[in-house]
Image 1: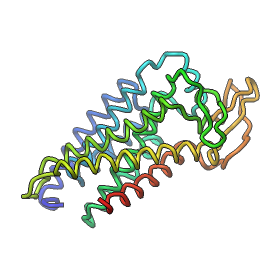
Image 2 (image 1 turned 60 degrees about the horizontal axis):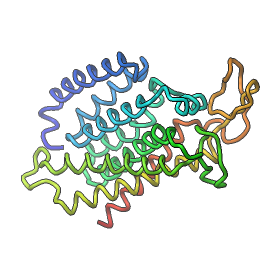
Image 3 (image 1 turned 180 degrees about the vertical axis):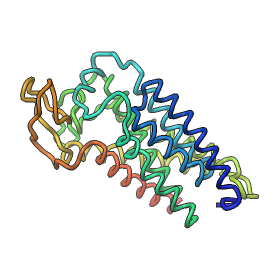
Amino acid sequence: MVGFIDEWWLRLLIGLLGSGLAAAAAYRARSLSGSGAWSAMVMGTGFVTLGEPVWFGVLIAFFISSTFWSKWKRHTRSKRDAEAKYAKSGRRDAGQVWANGGAGLLLCVLHALFPHDGWLLAYIGVMASVNADTWATEIGALSRSVPRSIVSGKQVPTGTSGGVTPLGSAAALGGAAFIGAVAALLLAVPQPGEAAAGLSGAAAAGLIAAAAAAGLAGAFADSLLGATGQAMYRCQVCGSETERTGHCGSPTRHIRGFAALDNDRVNLLSSLVAGLLALAIGQLL
């Protein structure tokens, strides 16, 4: 990264201040828990210190858009019913922050140490996937159509892991394309140390398409893992299926999936799939 050695300390200070203020604001708005706020500050500082504007710009776009949709019509019955089954809802904790952005930060570190466009392509795919999954979850919960299992095609209750709807799938595509568009917009401006013009129109369209395809694939991979491998439990009081180890004030019973494969790990694995796919698509463009 051009100028990294000379200005790393300034970028570090800016990152600490900016990320700290953003994390504090998110904590006050009840979007992040205490652990989530600290993790977001560390992560944001890393992106600002090590990456060009596109790296932390995409991260900010993900956080703002996902927070918006998480709060949109949150008190509707369909969203309340869905959130009752999720392992975590409401304020994002450290586990969720790192599951969504940890792989991206690692790619940013690798790009700083071993500069290559492939790291950025993979990063855009990773973030397109986590954004697609969030949009699909939050917007899809408002769907008037009954979700269907991605595996069997049978109807399942709202909030069931692996359940998909046309609205949720469309939201996933929109969320993935949104990340691609933000990245393309930021790359249209010449990056620090580059004399040439930024991304061309054709290249920008290709990047958006790659992000949309990879992000949508990541969201479907998330649903597939959720329906097959993710740990699921049965409430022994109300009988509902849930991601939680406790429900209705009592411990739940493990009924399927791998106990170690919780929702955070599912998100991480599916985002890695999307990152690899975005990298592969990028090599063809």
